[in-house]
Length: 227
Image (cartoon, rainbow, N blue to C red; front, side, top):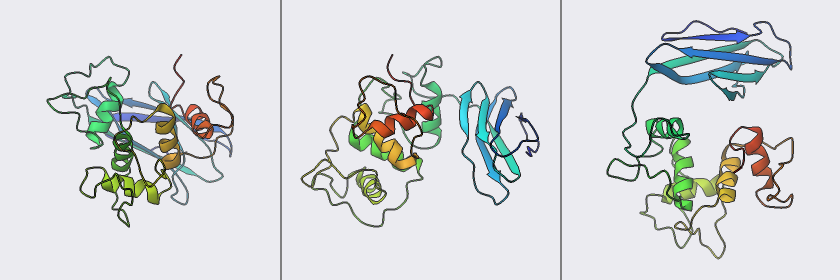
């Protein structure tokens, strides 16, 4: 496993020599005033390898059959401008990341409204922006999604990529609250892979439309439930 030196921080791997199937741990230590910006792991052919964030500057991946290169970039820590997002909030880093990536600009007047509810339009737009705001190949066909709405392209993109089929009768229900089940399902369809385990939540039945999405989210560290 190769981990070249980088500016403004240190990146170490353990073990440095690993066999196929071994779990390799990457430890990232930014210099004072800096934070990890990107971390990429690629095999010998240049294909990206899935990395799991274990917290506290540690990441893991499963060693493939080829050599692996780990690369990282550090950036200066930027302060968050939202007055209602304190630095000790559990969602502080997530909001800072989303603002930096242009995924959210808050709700106006220097606020983010962290305890507010997200609509279906909000969640799909967040996902679309996180994907780089790609131009959809076609226009949206839902009767309740105006062509000039801020979420029109996001909804069209989501339909093209199998993330949503709407809510029936040719509608998308953009202003309806997006439930936890719907949100995790959108995320799973956009980014997830088939889970290898079943979820252990008593309120998620095996035949629920969101069962696989929840199981994937638990495996990937996206959620631990609500208690």
